[in-house]
Image (cartoon, rainbow, N blue to C red; front, side):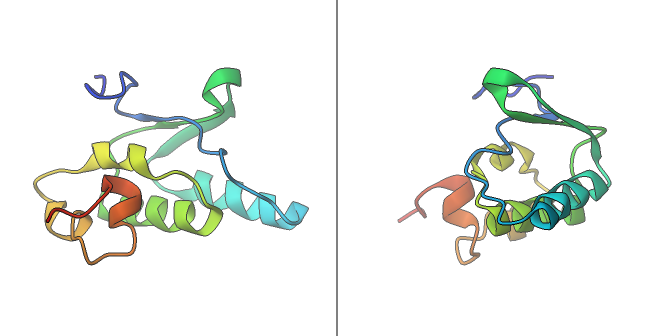
Length: 111
C-alpha cells in the first residue's frame, strides 16, 4: 500500500537521518537504540538517495506514534511524513493544533 501524496509505501519512512546532529557516539547510539525499540519498527538501513529508511511491521499505534513524534522532535528529524499515520482513531490527539508537533507534522493551523 502506497501513500497517495508521497508515493512511498505507507509502512516506510525515509530520510530519518536528515537534519540529525550527533554530538557524541553515545548520542548516535541512543538515537538508533530508541528508533529500533519502537515496537512497530521492523528495520532501518541507509539507502543513498532515500537516506535512513525505516520499515515498519505495521501501522504505528498511539504509543508508537508518540515515540516517533518525540524522537523526531528531540533529534530534529522532519516530521511531515508522520502525517500519513493519521487515522479516525488518533485524529483527536494527533491533529490537535495546540500540540507542539502540529505545525511540524501538518503545517499551518487552520484559521
